[in-house]
Length: 357
Ligand code: CP
Image (cartoon, rainbow, N blue to C red; front, side):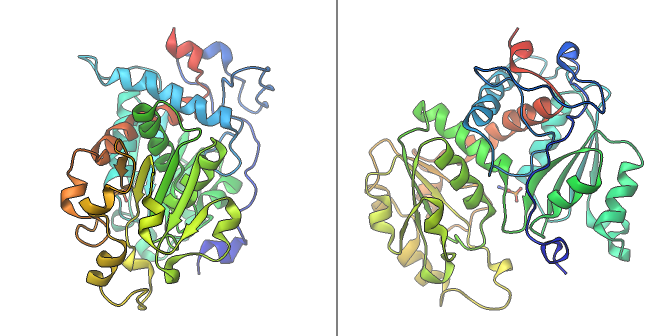
Protein backbone atom coordinates (compact mmCIF):
# COMPACT_ATOMS: atom_id res chain seq x y z
CA UNK A 1 0.00 0.00 0.00
CA UNK A 2 1.31 3.45 -0.83
CA UNK A 3 1.91 5.73 2.12
CA UNK A 4 -0.54 8.28 0.70
CA UNK A 5 -3.29 5.70 0.95
CA UNK A 6 -2.25 4.98 4.49
CA UNK A 7 -2.07 8.58 5.66
CA UNK A 8 -4.24 10.46 3.15
CA UNK A 9 -2.89 13.29 1.06
CA UNK A 10 0.40 14.87 2.04
CA UNK A 11 -0.38 16.95 5.12
CA UNK A 12 0.42 20.63 5.57
CA UNK A 13 4.04 21.08 6.55
CA UNK A 14 4.40 21.13 10.32
CA UNK A 15 5.92 24.18 11.96
CA UNK A 16 8.07 22.87 14.76
CA UNK A 17 11.34 23.54 16.41
CA UNK A 18 14.40 23.66 14.16
CA UNK A 19 17.18 21.11 14.32
CA UNK A 20 19.99 22.08 16.66
CA UNK A 21 22.18 24.79 15.25
CA UNK A 22 25.02 24.43 12.79
CA UNK A 23 28.43 24.99 14.31
CA UNK A 24 29.07 28.33 12.62
CA UNK A 25 26.11 30.04 14.24
CA UNK A 26 25.71 29.04 17.88
CA UNK A 27 24.34 32.45 18.85
CA UNK A 28 21.41 32.14 16.44
CA UNK A 29 20.52 28.66 17.63
CA UNK A 30 17.31 28.22 19.58
CA UNK A 31 17.68 25.63 22.33
CA UNK A 32 16.28 22.19 21.55
CA UNK A 33 12.57 22.09 22.24
CA UNK A 34 11.99 25.82 21.78
CA UNK A 35 10.27 27.50 18.86
CA UNK A 36 12.29 29.35 16.25
CA UNK A 37 11.75 33.08 16.87
CA UNK A 38 9.79 35.08 14.32
CA UNK A 39 12.09 36.35 11.60
CA UNK A 40 12.42 40.14 11.68
CA UNK A 41 11.15 42.12 8.69
CA UNK A 42 13.59 42.32 5.77
CA UNK A 43 15.53 39.62 3.95
CA UNK A 44 14.89 36.18 5.38
CA UNK A 45 17.75 34.72 7.41
CA UNK A 46 16.26 31.33 8.24
CA UNK A 47 13.80 28.80 6.85
CA UNK A 48 10.39 28.76 8.55
CA UNK A 49 10.11 25.02 8.83
CA UNK A 50 12.53 22.59 10.43
CA UNK A 51 12.00 20.13 7.54
CA UNK A 52 12.24 20.51 3.76
CA UNK A 53 9.29 18.48 2.56
CA UNK A 54 8.45 20.36 -0.62
CA UNK A 55 8.59 23.65 -2.49
CA UNK A 56 4.83 24.22 -2.15
CA UNK A 57 4.35 26.71 0.65
CA UNK A 58 7.88 28.14 0.63
CA UNK A 59 7.99 31.93 0.46
CA UNK A 60 10.00 33.67 -2.28
CA UNK A 61 12.37 34.97 0.42
CA UNK A 62 13.07 31.42 1.62
CA UNK A 63 13.90 30.28 -1.92
CA UNK A 64 16.18 33.29 -2.37
CA UNK A 65 17.84 32.52 0.97
CA UNK A 66 18.67 28.95 -0.15
CA UNK A 67 20.01 30.17 -3.51
CA UNK A 68 22.12 32.92 -1.90
CA UNK A 69 23.47 30.46 0.68
CA UNK A 70 24.29 27.97 -2.10
CA UNK A 71 26.35 30.66 -3.80
CA UNK A 72 28.57 30.92 -0.74
CA UNK A 73 28.73 27.11 -0.52
CA UNK A 74 29.79 26.90 -4.19
CA UNK A 75 32.85 28.97 -3.32
CA UNK A 76 33.99 26.23 -0.93
CA UNK A 77 34.33 23.86 -3.91
CA UNK A 78 36.93 26.19 -5.42
CA UNK A 79 39.23 26.08 -2.36
CA UNK A 80 42.26 23.77 -2.10
CA UNK A 81 40.61 22.16 0.95
CA UNK A 82 36.96 21.70 0.01
CA UNK A 83 35.71 21.07 3.52
CA UNK A 84 34.38 23.22 6.37
CA UNK A 85 33.58 22.14 9.97
CA UNK A 86 30.04 23.56 9.88
CA UNK A 87 28.18 20.30 10.60
CA UNK A 88 30.87 18.61 12.67
CA UNK A 89 29.31 16.20 15.21
CA UNK A 90 26.00 16.15 13.30
CA UNK A 91 24.77 12.85 11.89
CA UNK A 92 22.80 12.62 8.67
CA UNK A 93 21.08 9.43 7.48
CA UNK A 94 20.62 9.06 3.72
CA UNK A 95 17.55 6.82 3.57
CA UNK A 96 17.08 6.00 -0.12
CA UNK A 97 14.32 3.50 -0.84
CA UNK A 98 14.43 4.14 -4.61
CA UNK A 99 17.46 4.12 -6.92
CA UNK A 100 19.42 7.34 -7.30
CA UNK A 101 22.73 8.35 -8.83
CA UNK A 102 22.75 12.16 -8.64
CA UNK A 103 20.70 13.01 -5.56
CA UNK A 104 22.22 10.45 -3.24
CA UNK A 105 25.84 11.09 -4.17
CA UNK A 106 25.22 14.83 -4.17
CA UNK A 107 23.81 14.74 -0.63
CA UNK A 108 26.68 12.56 0.52
CA UNK A 109 29.31 14.88 -0.94
CA UNK A 110 27.49 17.90 0.53
CA UNK A 111 27.40 16.27 3.98
CA UNK A 112 31.08 15.37 3.81
CA UNK A 113 32.05 18.90 2.70
CA UNK A 114 30.23 20.19 5.79
CA UNK A 115 32.01 17.56 7.98
CA UNK A 116 28.81 15.74 9.00
CA UNK A 117 28.88 12.03 9.86
CA UNK A 118 26.82 10.15 7.29
CA UNK A 119 25.05 6.83 7.20
CA UNK A 120 23.80 5.42 3.90
CA UNK A 121 20.78 3.20 4.07
CA UNK A 122 19.25 1.30 1.16
CA UNK A 123 16.70 -1.55 0.80
CA UNK A 124 19.26 -4.09 -0.37
CA UNK A 125 21.32 -3.73 2.82
CA UNK A 126 18.51 -3.33 5.34
CA UNK A 127 15.75 -5.30 7.05
CA UNK A 128 13.17 -3.60 4.81
CA UNK A 129 13.58 -6.69 2.61
CA UNK A 130 12.36 -8.74 5.61
CA UNK A 131 9.12 -6.75 5.73
CA UNK A 132 9.93 -4.05 8.28
CA UNK A 133 7.58 -1.06 7.90
CA UNK A 134 8.71 2.45 7.01
CA UNK A 135 7.77 3.71 10.46
CA UNK A 136 9.57 0.92 12.34
CA UNK A 137 12.63 1.38 10.15
CA UNK A 138 12.63 5.14 10.77
CA UNK A 139 12.07 4.71 14.52
CA UNK A 140 15.00 2.31 14.73
CA UNK A 141 17.22 4.72 12.81
CA UNK A 142 16.06 7.50 15.14
CA UNK A 143 17.02 5.44 18.15
CA UNK A 144 20.61 6.12 17.05
CA UNK A 145 19.92 9.89 17.31
CA UNK A 146 20.59 11.26 13.83
CA UNK A 147 20.10 15.01 13.39
CA UNK A 148 18.62 14.76 9.89
CA UNK A 149 17.12 12.10 7.65
CA UNK A 150 17.26 12.55 3.86
CA UNK A 151 14.58 10.31 2.39
CA UNK A 152 13.70 9.14 -1.11
CA UNK A 153 10.65 6.90 -1.34
CA UNK A 154 8.29 5.63 -4.04
CA UNK A 155 5.25 6.70 -2.02
CA UNK A 156 4.10 10.30 -2.23
CA UNK A 157 3.85 11.71 1.30
CA UNK A 158 6.46 9.38 2.87
CA UNK A 159 8.65 12.33 4.06
CA UNK A 160 5.57 14.03 5.58
CA UNK A 161 4.77 10.78 7.38
CA UNK A 162 8.27 10.65 8.86
CA UNK A 163 8.10 14.34 9.80
CA UNK A 164 4.99 13.58 11.85
CA UNK A 165 6.59 10.69 13.69
CA UNK A 166 10.31 11.50 13.96
CA UNK A 167 12.33 14.01 15.94
CA UNK A 168 15.01 14.41 13.23
CA UNK A 169 14.76 17.09 10.56
CA UNK A 170 13.44 15.43 7.37
CA UNK A 171 14.60 16.34 3.87
CA UNK A 172 12.57 15.10 0.91
CA UNK A 173 14.91 13.70 -1.75
CA UNK A 174 11.97 12.74 -4.01
CA UNK A 175 8.63 11.18 -2.99
CA UNK A 176 6.66 9.28 -5.62
CA UNK A 177 5.05 11.64 -8.14
CA UNK A 178 4.78 14.40 -5.56
CA UNK A 179 7.87 16.63 -5.06
CA UNK A 180 11.65 16.73 -5.42
CA UNK A 181 12.44 20.05 -3.74
CA UNK A 182 16.25 20.02 -3.86
CA UNK A 183 16.10 19.28 -7.61
CA UNK A 184 13.93 22.37 -8.19
CA UNK A 185 16.24 24.45 -6.01
CA UNK A 186 19.33 23.36 -7.94
CA UNK A 187 17.50 23.98 -11.21
CA UNK A 188 16.58 27.47 -10.02
CA UNK A 189 20.17 28.09 -8.92
CA UNK A 190 21.43 27.01 -12.35
CA UNK A 191 18.94 29.25 -14.15
CA UNK A 192 19.75 32.22 -11.91
CA UNK A 193 23.49 31.78 -12.40
CA UNK A 194 23.03 31.68 -16.18
CA UNK A 195 20.27 34.28 -16.61
CA UNK A 196 20.79 36.48 -13.55
CA UNK A 197 17.16 36.18 -12.48
CA UNK A 198 14.09 33.96 -12.42
CA UNK A 199 11.38 36.62 -12.57
CA UNK A 200 9.94 37.22 -16.02
CA UNK A 201 11.69 34.28 -17.71
CA UNK A 202 9.75 31.87 -19.91
CA UNK A 203 10.48 28.25 -18.98
CA UNK A 204 9.23 25.41 -21.20
CA UNK A 205 8.97 22.05 -19.41
CA UNK A 206 8.46 19.16 -21.83
CA UNK A 207 7.92 15.44 -21.36
CA UNK A 208 6.26 13.01 -18.97
CA UNK A 209 4.38 15.55 -16.87
CA UNK A 210 2.15 12.93 -15.28
CA UNK A 211 4.78 11.08 -13.27
CA UNK A 212 7.20 13.92 -12.60
CA UNK A 213 7.94 15.14 -9.09
CA UNK A 214 10.59 17.34 -10.71
CA UNK A 215 7.85 19.08 -12.68
CA UNK A 216 5.68 19.73 -9.63
CA UNK A 217 8.52 21.18 -7.54
CA UNK A 218 9.74 23.29 -10.45
CA UNK A 219 6.26 24.56 -11.23
CA UNK A 220 5.70 25.67 -7.61
CA UNK A 221 9.13 27.30 -7.46
CA UNK A 222 9.07 29.05 -10.82
CA UNK A 223 5.56 30.45 -10.27
CA UNK A 224 6.51 31.61 -6.77
CA UNK A 225 9.52 33.44 -8.23
CA UNK A 226 7.56 35.12 -11.02
CA UNK A 227 8.57 33.04 -14.06
CA UNK A 228 6.16 32.08 -16.84
CA UNK A 229 5.82 28.30 -17.20
CA UNK A 230 4.75 26.40 -20.32
CA UNK A 231 4.13 22.68 -20.01
CA UNK A 232 4.09 20.26 -22.93
CA UNK A 233 3.57 16.53 -23.30
CA UNK A 234 1.32 13.95 -24.96
CA UNK A 235 -2.30 14.18 -23.72
CA UNK A 236 -1.91 10.81 -21.97
CA UNK A 237 0.89 12.26 -19.84
CA UNK A 238 -0.69 15.61 -18.91
CA UNK A 239 -2.22 15.48 -15.40
CA UNK A 240 -5.80 16.72 -15.16
CA UNK A 241 -6.03 20.20 -13.65
CA UNK A 242 -2.33 21.05 -14.01
CA UNK A 243 -3.21 24.35 -15.75
CA UNK A 244 -4.91 25.49 -12.55
CA UNK A 245 -1.44 25.71 -10.97
CA UNK A 246 -0.72 28.63 -13.26
CA UNK A 247 0.96 27.04 -16.29
CA UNK A 248 0.14 27.22 -20.01
CA UNK A 249 -0.41 23.70 -21.33
CA UNK A 250 0.61 22.75 -24.90
CA UNK A 251 0.07 19.45 -26.67
CA UNK A 252 2.60 20.32 -29.40
CA UNK A 253 6.24 21.03 -28.63
CA UNK A 254 6.80 23.80 -31.19
CA UNK A 255 4.59 26.50 -29.61
CA UNK A 256 5.89 25.51 -26.18
CA UNK A 257 9.48 26.21 -27.24
CA UNK A 258 8.81 29.43 -29.19
CA UNK A 259 10.87 32.22 -27.60
CA UNK A 260 11.61 30.27 -24.38
CA UNK A 261 14.54 31.34 -22.18
CA UNK A 262 14.89 27.90 -20.64
CA UNK A 263 13.95 24.45 -21.97
CA UNK A 264 13.67 21.75 -19.32
CA UNK A 265 13.20 18.20 -20.61
CA UNK A 266 11.68 15.50 -18.41
CA UNK A 267 12.44 11.82 -18.48
CA UNK A 268 9.81 9.40 -19.72
CA UNK A 269 9.24 7.30 -16.58
CA UNK A 270 8.31 3.93 -18.04
CA UNK A 271 8.77 2.26 -14.64
CA UNK A 272 5.81 4.26 -13.27
CA UNK A 273 3.51 3.46 -16.20
CA UNK A 274 2.61 0.09 -14.63
CA UNK A 275 2.28 -2.16 -17.67
CA UNK A 276 0.46 0.37 -19.86
CA UNK A 277 2.14 2.61 -22.39
CA UNK A 278 1.19 6.25 -22.71
CA UNK A 279 2.39 6.33 -26.35
CA UNK A 280 2.86 3.71 -29.09
CA UNK A 281 6.66 3.68 -29.51
CA UNK A 282 9.76 5.53 -28.33
CA UNK A 283 10.40 6.51 -31.97
CA UNK A 284 6.97 8.16 -32.25
CA UNK A 285 7.49 9.93 -28.93
CA UNK A 286 10.82 11.29 -30.13
CA UNK A 287 9.30 12.41 -33.45
CA UNK A 288 6.55 14.36 -31.67
CA UNK A 289 8.17 15.51 -28.41
CA UNK A 290 11.92 14.87 -28.64
CA UNK A 291 14.25 17.87 -28.35
CA UNK A 292 16.27 18.08 -31.56
CA UNK A 293 18.70 20.74 -32.78
CA UNK A 294 16.02 22.02 -35.20
CA UNK A 295 13.51 22.44 -32.36
CA UNK A 296 16.04 24.17 -30.10
CA UNK A 297 16.20 26.96 -32.73
CA UNK A 298 12.59 27.87 -31.85
CA UNK A 299 13.70 28.96 -28.38
CA UNK A 300 15.65 32.18 -27.73
CA UNK A 301 19.15 32.27 -29.21
CA UNK A 302 20.68 32.17 -25.71
CA UNK A 303 18.24 29.60 -24.30
CA UNK A 304 19.66 26.98 -21.96
CA UNK A 305 18.75 23.29 -22.09
CA UNK A 306 18.17 21.40 -18.84
CA UNK A 307 17.38 17.83 -17.82
CA UNK A 308 17.27 16.48 -14.24
CA UNK A 309 18.62 13.08 -15.33
CA UNK A 310 18.73 10.24 -15.87
CA UNK A 311 18.25 10.92 -19.60
CA UNK A 312 16.73 8.63 -22.21
CA UNK A 313 18.85 9.71 -25.15
CA UNK A 314 16.97 9.43 -28.41
CA UNK A 315 13.61 9.38 -26.59
CA UNK A 316 13.12 12.78 -24.94
CA UNK A 317 16.36 14.39 -26.08
CA UNK A 318 18.79 14.04 -28.97
CA UNK A 319 22.39 13.40 -27.90
CA UNK A 320 23.53 16.34 -30.04
CA UNK A 321 21.39 18.63 -27.84
CA UNK A 322 22.19 16.94 -24.54
CA UNK A 323 25.92 17.37 -25.21
CA UNK A 324 25.61 20.61 -27.19
CA UNK A 325 26.69 24.16 -26.34
CA UNK A 326 23.36 25.23 -24.81
CA UNK A 327 23.18 22.26 -22.45
CA UNK A 328 23.68 22.96 -18.73
CA UNK A 329 22.84 19.40 -17.69
CA UNK A 330 26.16 18.66 -15.98
CA UNK A 331 26.21 22.15 -14.44
CA UNK A 332 22.92 21.20 -12.76
CA UNK A 333 24.67 18.21 -11.19
CA UNK A 334 27.62 20.34 -10.04
CA UNK A 335 25.29 22.96 -8.56
CA UNK A 336 23.33 20.25 -6.73
CA UNK A 337 26.15 19.84 -4.21
CA UNK A 338 26.19 23.55 -3.25
CA UNK A 339 22.40 23.69 -3.05
CA UNK A 340 22.24 20.61 -0.82
CA UNK A 341 25.00 22.03 1.38
CA UNK A 342 22.87 25.16 1.72
CA UNK A 343 19.75 23.17 2.64
CA UNK A 344 21.60 21.06 5.24
CA UNK A 345 23.26 24.15 6.72
CA UNK A 346 20.04 26.18 6.95
CA UNK A 347 18.00 23.31 8.41
CA UNK A 348 20.72 22.85 11.04
CA UNK A 349 20.04 26.42 12.11
CA UNK A 350 22.78 28.13 10.11
CA UNK A 351 22.39 31.68 8.85
CA UNK A 352 23.61 33.24 5.64
CA UNK A 353 25.04 36.23 7.49
CA UNK A 354 27.32 34.09 9.65
CA UNK A 355 28.45 32.06 6.67
CA UNK A 356 29.28 35.11 4.57
CA UNK A 357 31.32 36.66 7.37
N1 CP B 1 17.59 14.01 -10.79
C1 CP B 1 17.57 12.92 -9.96
O1 CP B 1 16.80 12.86 -9.01
O2 CP B 1 18.44 11.94 -10.32
P1 CP B 1 18.67 10.60 -9.47
O3 CP B 1 17.43 9.77 -9.59
O4 CP B 1 19.88 9.95 -10.08
O5 CP B 1 18.91 11.00 -8.05
